Image (cartoon, rainbow, N blue to C red; front, side, top):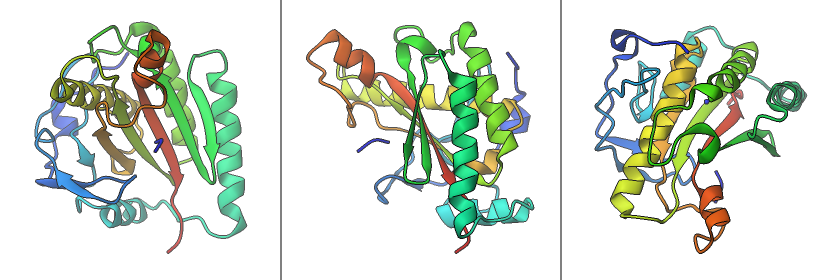
Length: 223
């Protein structure tokens, strides 16, 4: 299973989050115990879960985009739209340390923790601001997409600590992108802790790969 240097005012990101959220990768409903707070750092963080004003669900996010005047994609336009967005991401993120992968019509951006954050920190490294600025610019050029920001951790330390750290890192990335005017209703924000490794946790290199934030960009399609 694999799974976006402005300070944003808290009031601009104040919104309620329900007691449960649905994981976009598994479809499971899970408690949302940490989604009520606002993380304040280099940029204000986003609460966990779906960030729509209308409904804490995938359907609510779709309705929010339609309400914002963002038309859904259909037919051959889906692949073409995502092709152009993928090309723009690859051009802007070349040599940034961010991996860009295509999975069907989804675009997956993999941001290694050692590039994005200091050890055991959820504060974005200042040198990474421009990378996120580039991501935000492309997302704003292609608004007919959903943006899922998911944090991951390695297995070093306590599982509950790793879960919270993965959530805080996802919050930081999402909050920064929202601060760059990416529509918050496009977002889902969550953390997987140490439960979804992409490499072995038995080696330093493997643990470094597992410490990451992933942004999955998915097309807003007509139902």
